[in-house]
Length: 267
Image 1: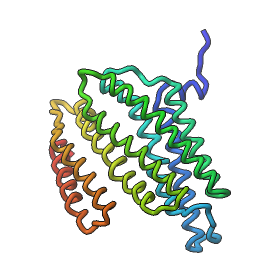
Image 2: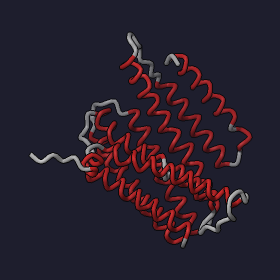
Image 3: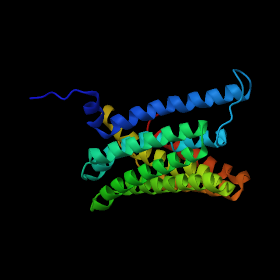
Image 4: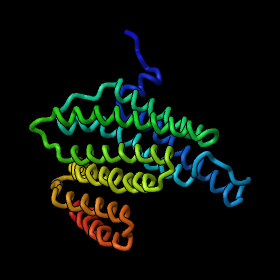
């Protein structure tokens, strides 16, 4: 019997392998590029480089939509079927997602150096990858009748908001309308990344603790999850409305929720 031990075989054997690998490399590339830009901008090393689009907002996009999603999809492709006893995500789906996102990121970097239209096509490819991944996860969610789908619903809504955030950034690249950029960056943090972090932490921290600690009682108060999600959404809406002087209220409430869970979870 042939022993398939090649690199491609190992990377394609599970959803998280290829996505986590590229995500880690992308994190290094993004920070290296940003360090290079800052070093030239402030004359630490060399001189300032002229990019095809504003580097600050390029960095924001790369961190929010071009770094974390590799880990998010690698994780959710594995956990959605486990959470809801659903059909496993097929290799062609997670590998296509990884390849399209990688290609989009490569075009984005190339476009920063050469032409803005390459950046635009890179974002289009990333948006296509998001659409492909979201539809695959949504099929698992819809098919999971009779299962506890609350955490998956939260993460699915957050993924949809992430899709809208990428679309807004794409339209900003084309139109230069500042409100689209504001929507993209605030949505990415408060309606996409943070809700996923809250939902996954609420689900997985008690689960993992129960696996390693004797007599551990899992505490998952859903009212607290809904409150934290409300705080995240409130912060985002206040930012988008220009009422940043009031963001302390949801932030303070969110901090109290985190303190309460830290105590209950035994941190």
